[in-house]
Image (cartoon, rainbow, N blue to C red; front, side, top):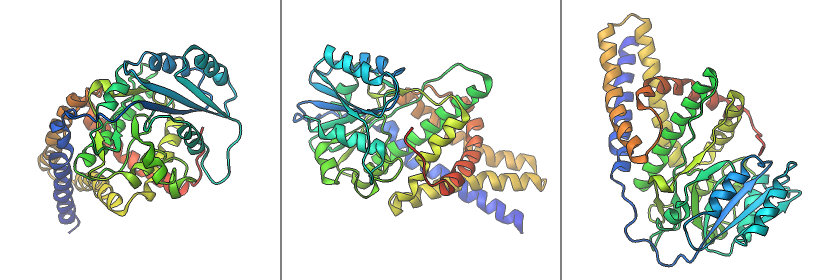
Length: 373
């Protein structure tokens, strides 16, 4: 009886996974650059919140200084830094009048510190179009231009893609880097394709743009202003619609990010990110829950049948029935996104995802408060 149930679960989970891959994720393959960019954008305000980023700021400031877009400003909120970040920002502002910074020495109660920093920077923006990234990120020289050209007349929100950098380090950290890049690639596939389906539900703050009027209309970060995290995904979850949201995925629009190099650091980062998921709309929670549950059930059912000594050839057929289509679709999407993830390692990282769901999912439920670093 249990074996029959396990086979049924395998069939259902494979069907769900292939449905998402073939009918939702594959939409990325047919997405083209906006052919009718808005002519109403007169400039862009780049918004960054940083804390103790003296190591990363020089590289970022240099890249921003050399952007090809003709009309932009950069506003950086320095949130209670104890290193030399303030000095670096003061020097940058003296060298280039397009740069401004706000020095925050204390935060207000009732709002998360990072959201307070971003809110203060947003309030100083002179342009209607805002563009967000983090201090440890590196965009290309045409980044602002590509984002600007992704706005059509009705667009209020643009979702960008931000892969993580491949790093050479110790073997155990190489595995961490591999998994981080896989998780980022898979998450990117989800939120970008859902947006193309007309159901935008999140973004990453490393590469996100929206109109200042949307921010003001929402009352800043709204009812989630005290939540740790969510300045990107919860904001988009509240404000993005089928008609006001666009995506941009070409290589020059992307922002490369530096990944965590320790398992502990990555654990706290992902726990903070996933803990905000319970605040998503019910529709999005349900769809993502079905997708993630099908992933978990596939491995649990396959593991049960293997332990009960089911015929190996039959189990292999089930395994390949799922993996061949997924690898094919993901391989094509990888090329579309110009991502550096090695698709041949997908079977390894896909299995690690099972552990990721269980460990991080449980932690995000029980760990209540996670601080802005």
